[in-house]
Image (cartoon, rainbow over all chains, first blue to last red; front, side, top):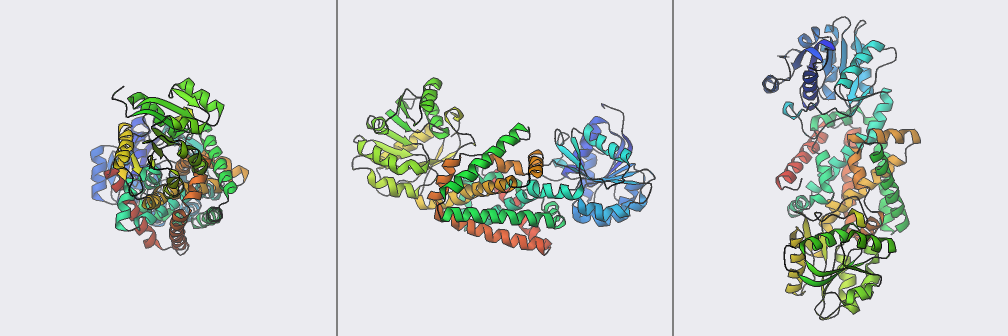
Amino acid sequence: MASTPLFESVALIGLGLIGSSLARVMKREGLSGEIVGCAQSQATRDKAMELGFVDRVETDVGKAAESADLVVICTPLGTYRALGEEIAPRLKRGAILSDVGSVKEVVLREIGPLVKKGAHFVPAHPVAGTEHSGPEAGLDTLFEERWCVLTPAKGTSKQAVERVSELWRRAGSKIEIMDAAHHDKIMAITSHLPHLIAYTIVGTATDLEESARAEVIKFSASGFRDFTRIAASDPVMWRDIFLNNQEAVLEMLGRFSEDLTALQRAIRWKDEEKLQDLFTRTRAIRRSIIDAKQA
Amino acid sequence: MASTPLFESVALIGLGLIGSSLARVMKREGLSGEIVGCAQSQATRDKAMELGFVDRVETDVGKAAESADLVVICTPLGTYRALGEEIAPRLKRGAILSDVGSVKEVVLREIGPLVKKGAHFVPAHPVAGTEHSGPEAGLDTLFEERWCVLTPAKGTSKQAVERVSELWRRAGSKIEIMDAAHHDKIMAITSHLPHLIAYTIVGTATDLEESARAEVIKFSASGFRDFTRIAASDPVMWRDIFLNNQEAVLEMLGRFSEDLTALQRAIRWKDEEKLQDLFTRTRAIRRSIIDAKQA
C-alpha cells in the first residue's frame, strides 16, 4: 500500500493476462478502494477470488459498472460493442470508462457515442504482454517501464485523462497521448504485422510433412523459435485485432509483401549488393532500439 | 584442462563469433595441443592474441593448414571456394578439413572434390549463434546443449567423422548426422526463412517516413523488437547463406507467400474462423518446442 487510492471502486471487465495484471498492481499499490472483477466463466471468477487480486466478483457487467468510478474493459475487441451497450448507460455521473485494447480508432468510434454526458471515455493501450493468457498468467510487474498510449477524443475532460494517466503511471508505465488513427498505424507495423508474419511462418512449418515437422521443432533454436513465441499469443484476441485494424494492417502487409518480393528476386538473381545493403541497414535499426533502451 | 587433447594442432580459418567461440571452448577444455588462428585483418589477429584464445596466428591460410591435423573453416560461405583451393593441397596425410557453415550441399560439392585421398572432409554446422559478430563476441558456452549437424559424403572415414563429432561433443553440443540436402531444407524453414522475413520487415519499417520511424523504435517492444534482434545478424554471412541455399529458400519462401496471401484475404473478407483456426494451431507448435526443451 504505497499510496492513497486514486479511485473508490474500479471494475475490471475481463480478468485475463492484462486485466489480472492490472488488478495485481492496483492491489499492490493500493490504487483503488475496491477492485471488482467481472468474467464470463465461473472458473475465472473463482480463480480470481482464490488468487486474491480482486475484492469481489460480479457476473453482471452492468451491475459491476454502476458502482464503479472507473470501468476498464479488458476483453477481446470483438466483445466491445455489446459490452459498451451494457456498460455505458449504467455509468455513474463523473465515472470514467477505459479499455486496454490494441486497436483504438474503432473503439473510439463504436464506444465513444454510447458514453453519455457526465461520464468520460478514455481509451488506453498498455503496450505490454506475454504469450500466455488467463488469470494465472498476470504479473504485477507487466507494465513496468512499458508505454501506455492514451487516445482520448478531442474535448475529453483533461481531468479524466489525467486520472487514467496516473493509474498507469503508478502501475509503472510511461504515458503517451496520441491520435487514435496514428496509434493504429504505428501498431500495425510494430505489433500487428510482426504477429501476422509469425503466425504465418509457424503455420507454413506446421504444414510440412510429418517427418520434417519433428525436425523443425528439434532445430527451432536457429531463428524459428522466436517466431513461435509470438505466434503463441491468444488466438481470439489476435483475431479481433486483425479484424479491427484491417485497413492499417493490409496497408503495412502490402508494403511488406512488395519488399519480400524484391528480396526474393535479389536471391533468385544473386544480387549480392542488394542483399548486403539491406542486411547492413537493418543492423543499424537494432542499434537504435538498444540506444532507446527498448531492447 | 578437462581432458586429453583430441588433436595435436587445430587451425581455425576465421576468428569471428563462431571461430572464436570454438577456440575459447577448445582452450578451456584442452581439446588441442595447439590452436592456430587465421584471419584476414591484422586487427582481428591482434585481438585474438590479446584475448588469448589462440596460441599463435597465421596470415597465410595454406601455411596455417599444413601443420594442422584439423582445419576448420569459420568464414562466410562466399570465401569457401578460394579457401578450399588454398587449403586442400596443403593438408597433411590423415588430416581432417571441416567447416561451420549454415548451408551444406554447396560446400560438399565445391570443397569435397578438392580434398585429396588420404585427407578427410567432414562438413559441420553448429546450430548456434547470437546477433553479434567479431572475435570479441565469442563465448565458450555458445555450443552448450545446441545441435551440431555433420553432413559427411558417403564413404567418408568413420573415424574422421567420429573425431569431429567428439570435438563438438566436448564443446557441449549434441550431434546429428544428416544428408546435406536434407539439412539445407530443414534450415531453410527453421533458420533462413525466419531471418529473411525479419530482415524484410525491419527494412519495411526503416522505409517509413522519418517521424513514424522514431515511433517504431519507441514502441518496438510490442513484437517488432524480436525481429530486429534476428535482423541484426552478420550481413555478409547472411548474404552468402541466401545465395548458397537459393533453391530451398525460394521454395520455402514460395510456400510462406502463399500462406500470407491466404491470411491477407482472410483479413480482407473478415473470415474470423480461418484466422482463429490458424492462431490456435500455431499455439500448439510452441507447446511442442517447450516440450522438446528447445524454448
